[in-house]
Length: 201
Image (cartoon, rainbow, N blue to C red; front, side, top):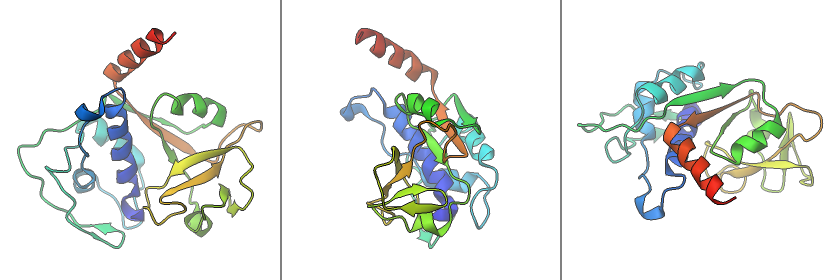
């Protein structure tokens, strides 16, 4: 799903944020990746301007997967489909993009909410990462004693360990293996999170 991995990551981040602090019985149903794929232009090798997708999530949003189910995925290409109307979309207030990533600061962010990590052309070594390896650019390493991130790859469950793997987390030298990160914001969520944190202190 490399061509549409950007859409998968974007929708998963939105859905995860909107379901934080919501009881399981009241959690939002699955949001539609297909709706985003239908609406945001992308190339055969993926999307070249991720900010267009982030702007779409903020201004237009996406509907439930029941309103716009995935038609089919032929290899890495998603076929366009027609969404069922009327459509109710879920939106976020903003999508923040950071290009100067520092892992120490990123730790504080991921403790609060879902984050999309963006790698720069990780290549075959990343795609071939095994469950007993940790990825450190430019190749996977067997030693998993390094400080690490546990990441979910939008490429699918065939990657690493059921779609999850390890990536080196920098602790002293600054910077990050991620060249960019993006995360959704919802004002109501922030207010509820602050109230919850205060009640626990």
